[in-house]
Image (cartoon, rainbow, N blue to C red; front, side):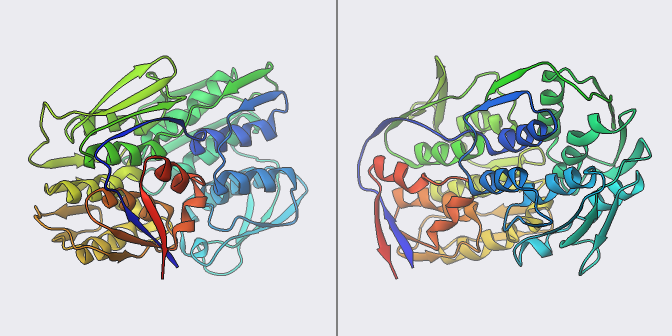
Length: 409
């Protein structure tokens, strides 16, 4: 079953609100489980966050995270400091193919007791909660920033804190900055110099209240919709000009793709800019924000402009191999595209094949990044319910934007 997506309206004008940031929510939920005197508003409604909430509220001996990669990483670190308790943590078939070795090795190096139940370096895991005995560890920075964030979140609970040496380049650094931002907000002292991070032991904090900003990764699909539209103005609430989310880079990127952005009170306004034109070619290093790569690649194809995207090595270990998935589905639509281990190269195209079935590979971002192409030609999104992972009301909002959405076999 799939959705046939089409849009024939000449004008889009809508005000709406998006769910709280998944990244902010998941970090704050771990911290709230460590420090009880916290109050959080506008928590993400994504399945990933709901999975984390469910497991934190009921710490059973067997923990199933399903497809939730952040929950797997953050809970692995969190469970490792639950002294005297034993857990097994597992997930979906795809989750058991996503590496977790660097995080496990780092935790074990400071006194954790984590064992692989099947293949070395991958879930499922057996975790015996321990009191950490050491304060210094090293971990590679180019696999997943979530490994380092998972360590940072438990650092204040370790006696004398934790010193982390990050080896090599850091992928998705804004997500590390976000984690450190929240630690400092709670009054926890941190030092981040070059590739070394120090977090000081902090067992108690003052009462803390926080209103989570809406999700910039989810906002990316509306940048794409405005870019591909003839005439659009969208006002989307609960976004901040001084956001801590790394995907704020969308503003600069989409200025070159025909979208002007402005802030009004607590909202961002996205408007189709027909005056300044669209770039002839896009060349970007997305090492700091790889989650928006699919949106940009599909958007460029829809506009008929070539793009070269770099810094994408982590996309191969996401919900699916996103680089290969993009290549497969864009080629169905008529694109000429090449991929490497860490880059994507899309040639200029003139035509878009109609009524093509887009496979989503159990990946929410595949569904949402391709949906805006309905502005250019009818397109079929298979397994559309995958959006529940991060954006449960995505299709409802598209219908409000006058997208025609009907069931298709």
